[in-house]
Amino acid sequence: MAKFGHYLLLAAILTLAAYFRFQGLDWDQGYLFHPDERQILFVTTRLDLPANPLEFFSADSALNPKFFAYGSFPIYLLKALAIFAPATNFPIPWEDNRLVSYALLGRALSALFDLGTVALIFFLGRRLYTARVGLLAAAGVAVTVLNIQLSHFYTVDTILTFFILATIYFAARYAETARPRDQIALSVAFGLALATKISAVPLIAPIIFATIKANSLLNKEHPDLIVDKSISLRNSQFAIRNSLFAWRTRISNARAELRKIFFISLAVFFITQPYALLDPIRFIGQTGTEALIARGWLDVPFTRQYSDTLPYAYAIAQSSVWGMGLPLGLVAWIGAGFFLWRWWRAREWRDGFILAWALIYFFAIGGQSAKHLRYLLPLIPFFYLMAAHTISNFKFRIPNYFFRIAFVVALLAAFVYSLAFVGIYSREHPYSAISRWIYQNIPRGATIAIEHWDDQLPLSIRAAEANRAPIEYQEIILPLFDPDDDAKLKMLADSIAASDYIILASQRLYATIPRLGARYPFSARYYSRLFNGDLGFDLAAFARNDPELGGIVIADNALTEAGLTIPPPLANFFARVQVWAWGKADESFTVYDHPMPLVFKKNRAVPRDELLRLIAQNF
Image 1 (cartoon, rainbow, N blue to C red):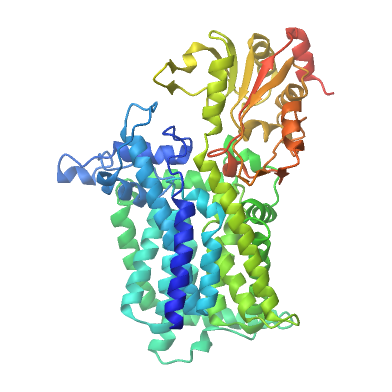
Image 2 (cartoon, rainbow, N blue to C red):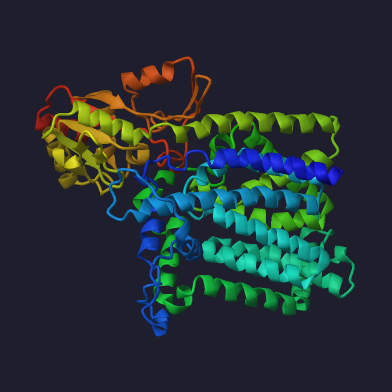
């Protein structure tokens, strides 16, 4: 009966999770504002079967995606299921109508994979600890805003997280049973995780951990032998040396089983990503480039936003406030900290097994240069698992039920945050709203300045009454991420003098460049002068689509951290009593589904020489 009740609660959690994840999958009305999703769709629509079987083995095969920033499995999966892509009737700007149909199918798949994550964290929690722990962790994932947001994009994040969890779940089963079917299942899941994104490589650690445990069962050794409890701060040097020797011996003893696992995993990887083997130069080149960008060894504009951010602290702060929401984010991180402390004291193999993934992955991604919030998605279910286990099993001076109530209250707060957030998918996208304003208020033939490395506004609009397009205006593109020099200074002055309007599509540039004054002295001053009105432009319009519930608005604000003056219309918005400003959100959290486009209108002409002086000189 208790088991039936657990399944009933899991069904309720999954129903709630599905409600959040399937709301408004057509949120962008076919414009495909997420660049990574857009690239995956472009690649998928280009794929075709080879003209003959031998062509399959060529790097020029029509089945080769020739795109390896992500794995090939999500691309092939979408192509294989394309017959289920729904028909659409959006007045879309794309020549290939399949793009939007594929996007809707892909987003549904992304949501389904995330539902699978909710279910898997329950089963993992129940297997390693108790059903209560699994249910609390599943509830946490169900109401986590970051999971909900990424379920609305067909990128690889939810798919990757699902296969990471599947690998660890089957590894846990294999560790406790040593059954071949669990060994095969974890191998297949690991191969699919790698074929989704190569960043799943740290799964090797928990796989080794589980295999040593399973091997101890096969050899009828005491399971606790795989956990060295002798290491402490007082005897660390000697104990660590002995422990490393013991681990090397255990790994050597388990090498036959490990070879089986890695052979099957690599076979699955190459079956689902064959051109990693058949087109190795492109595969190694592109994955290597992505690694260099992530580590900060290759400078690109879209990672400069992280130039002055603190390793690890940035990830903790952003995930706590925006990804999970307060107070649930704090509960998750604090619970994970206590979980780590408890493992250090007790060295339970189950705790060490979870940490073998969580610690290695967190240290890898939290310390790198690129700190996109989505990189934390494969950790979030494990944060909840660790926090739930901490609350359910730790012995404190304060009664245990106090912590359980605190967890439930945090879940309720996250539920409210999710309700507010999911509303953005039922309202008009800010780009559509600001494009309508532009066409209604800016006369044809006017000169508008827009920025490179950002979406270009206004959008093309196809409507029964009239079709509107950006070609109605004279466009000037401002290359503000280019190096500052005298030529760029003159270009800026000339462009500002010639422009009637300046359009900033999102925070991609204005929230980054002013913080890099040493690198961009002219461009940083340009933004400062633009926002305080010195260049003769005033904010004429902006559009926002913030999380909102019951009249309370949860707003992000990147201007203050960038040191920019908040123009009066925006200042009035933030001053409203019902606006709850939480500070700056990670760029990748806002610029796809709820950016804030700004339109500045020239209200007085500033001479070119004066513009040069204003941009070149300090205040």
